[in-house]
Each structure stands twice: as structure tokens, then as C-alpha cells.
Length: 425
Length: 84
Image (cartoon, rainbow over all chains, first blue to last red; front, top):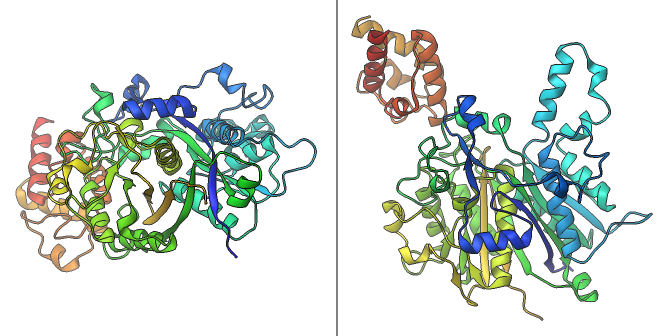
């Protein structure tokens, strides 16, 4: 028999708040984490704004040892460890002493790890100094560095792996962990994703001209999901993590339950019918949403709030059209919808996890975080859904029971997960 | 460079990216890169880079936004060449 799966721990490292308490405060207030970077200007970037979490040296030492931080240059791994460890403690667990936690695992995704570390290594290699790479070049640059560091610190003994599906990575990670728990193959899993920042991550997007170059003088209003004046995404970074646990395990230890994962779906548009390496196949997006609803055994009418992908490119109206078509709801029958990206930018491979943490906080705390920077809603959006469904100030309500969270990524891949407020029984 | 030479030069640049041979054979000033030649919009930046290399010019971000048709692209290239 398949197991019910609940969320019992949260951790987050976001541009507008490090740690769950700061993050929750920031998203309620609509606080932006986007700033201007002169270093990007000097490197001739068109978009010189972005979101980077503020992490002091002192804070790093709460998570990694001085030895681990020696010659450390892989912020994505740091963020993963911070979010993952926070979530683990939040759930009420501690590090394994001698023996590994056999029933606890981790699926922690990333797009790429340690690009700056790789850059250091490349310079050394090209000047014939291979031995100068030392012992930690591999661990800091392998994709699975995020899950390897995190699981080693905690002592996880179940499946430990890293998934990668571009901007759908985080949402996919949570779904993969959910499926493992549902199948009874573990009792608890840390799931999440991270993304590092800076020119070596963001450069390729700048070259594609998909990031906005119009807000270098006004960084906090640059990320404009659903706005008519949206002119490209603003890059972000960080990590989000959840502890997923079987309901029986959570109940047995009387754990605080944030929400229940009802189900979800991942798919691909196959880069057919309008889908390409960089653009989604709308039929596949709709299919993914419908499959998620079916998997969660709910009806489209049950969805109270959509936590969208909505990146602030010209494609936002297409995403809204896809939700309308998939749910068969429009106008004032459409659920509430919001995008965290208006505050933190597009945190790329970390986006699905950070945004899921925001969604779960809203469910538990009975609030809908506001959309910022969309006072001028795109007419192709306001013509199909009621403007009042796009709140621009925080709403406190106990009426939100079910949230659909979707993420879409390069490679024409999609993920949609359904979270529900947990009620005893 | 006259108009005919320019359009021929632009044809060479566009050729690797086009997805509609028929429209490409009949490429005129009115041709739209995405709608007619079915070029993947992500490839437009590669076309811009190839234009920069071929004509030894630099295209700015705001100019690029207009370069969706052969006509507007030719106009920008001509202006850049005159400024040189």
C-alpha cells in the first residue's frame, strides 16, 4: 500500500532572506533581494542586476568546518548544505553519530556545481600544474557535490543523489523524493535544489538576451512577472530544501507537519509542436498539470492557488493560457496566482525548491505572498483571468487549502506538484 | 555595398539557421526571420553575432530588438557601415 507523505522540515537560502524566519518575513512584505553589480558591468554584461543570498563568513562556519571551507569555492554546495541542514534540524532531527541513518536519504538537485572552482582548476591545468588541484577539486565540481556534502554532514544512509533538469530541477527533486517515500523505500528524504551565482553561471543567459537590460538603474523593479513591461528575467541564486517524511513516521514522533504532498507529475514536450531546447511545448505543459491533478486525486476546482513558473519574459501570458486550458477555469473562476520571482528573480535550478518552500510557508501560515512589480498586468493575461486573482499585497486567509506549484526548464521539461494543507486525519 | 549585395550577404548569414527552405529561396526584404524562415528565436542572437563578424560591426541590445525582418536588419547594417 502506498504511503502518505508530508513535509516536516523547511530550509531556505534566498536572495531576500537567509533562513526560514527571515525569508517568511521578506515574502510577506514583498521585499526584493535584487541588487546591481558593478562587477557585471565591468564584464560588459547587458543585465547587471541579480539576486544573491547574503551569507557571512561567520554563518558559513555554522554549517561547514574550517577544513571543509579551506580552498572552498562552490557556493551552490554551501547553499545546499545550509538549506538542507536547516530543514533537517527544523524537522527535529540531528546528525548521525556512528552509523548512518539508513531510512533517510536525499535528492538534491543542481544545474551545475562549482563553476568558479572549475575555473581555478582550468587555469592550473592549462599552465601544467595538475598536482596543484589538490584533493577537493572533484568533490566541489561534480554535479552530485550538493547531495554528497549534505548527506556526509548529516549521515544519510538511504538513496543519496542529485537530479538535474534545468529550471524544473527543484520541483522534480521534491517529486522524486515523494515517489520514493510513497513506495516505502525510505522513511524520510531531504529534497531540494541549489544554484550558484555570478558571471560564469549567468553569462550564457545574458548572451541569449533573455535577461532584462532595462533595469540596471532600478534593480528592485526589474523582475516583473505577468507585467506588460516585463523585459526578461533577472537571475537569482540560492537553495531551498524540504524534509519529506511518511505520515506514519511523522505521526509516530509527533512531528510538526507543514503540509501534505498529494502528488504531481513530470514530463517533457519532446521539443515537438512548438517546444524547443528553450521554449515549452504548451500541450506538454497542460498535460503535466492535468497529470499532476490526476495523480493527486483532486479536481481542478480544488486548486486555490497557483505558484507559477512565471519568469518575467514575454512567455508569461502563454503560461497563463496553459493554466487556463489545463484547469478549465478562467476569469473570476481562476484560482489565485503568484510568482516568487518578482522578489528573488529567477533562481534557475534552485527556483523550484525555493518557490516550493514559499508555497508551503503560505499553506502553513495562512497567507498568500504578494506579486510585486505587476501593477501593469499584461493585457493578454488580464483578458483571460480576473486581475483580482493576481494579488499585489499580502492576503491573510485560511481559505487556501491546495496549491499547485509548477516549474518548466530548458530541454522542454516540466514538473508540477500539488501541496495540501495538512489536517489531522 | 548595394542593396542586392547586402541581401545576398545576409542570406549567407541566415542559411545555417533557417527551417523553411522554400521561404528561404524566396527571401526578400519583407521576410521575417521567425515567422517566414521558421528560425528558432533562440538562434537570433547567433545571427546577430554572425552579422557582427561578417560586417565587422557591433550591434547594441536595443538595436537587436528591431532585427526581426530582413529589411530592418539591412537598415541597421547599412547605418553601421556608413558610420564606420
